[in-house]
Image 1 (cartoon, helix red, strand yellow):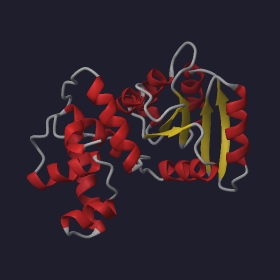
Image 2 (image 1 turned 90 degrees about the horizontal axis):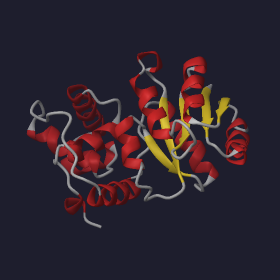
Image 3 (image 1 turned 45 degrees about the vertical axis):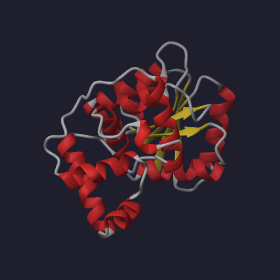
Length: 222
């Protein structure tokens, strides 16, 4: 059973997500929160697999709530998916920096929402290639320069190439095709990179790639 917490300041939004997710046999909504503080409290009390987190909420916002969940050792394994109204929401990059495992647009197709919950619950990052390239590139291009928080010195040249591919939104299968390796080898490379950079998941690898200057918006194109 996949346990989910829904955090949004609009009761109708919470009710809609609950109805949709509870209709799935293997998914259970174990709590709702109207603000970030409530989301953090629920995460501690219920230890869900996934928290669907709105960004703009009164009091403690979704970014700070995400940061607190990601930093709490008791909540290891709890994954946060950011809910946003627009794909180009300027706060989404900050949410990924804070430790979110991905993001969803609120008007996404219901089947895609259910798929997203399953993807994140099994430990993968929710980073659609096309949206990732556009969103992160736009945000970084108009935002202030970001200082690298982790060194890439420990990475081999091949690992740096694969990190750049992850930042571009490529899946393990696509990385395997690009570098003429097997998907299993691609997955091993990505896991090793996460270990060296102390990253929770692929979403954090995207942030690190941009912060370090390994990948820039101009290299991805528009």
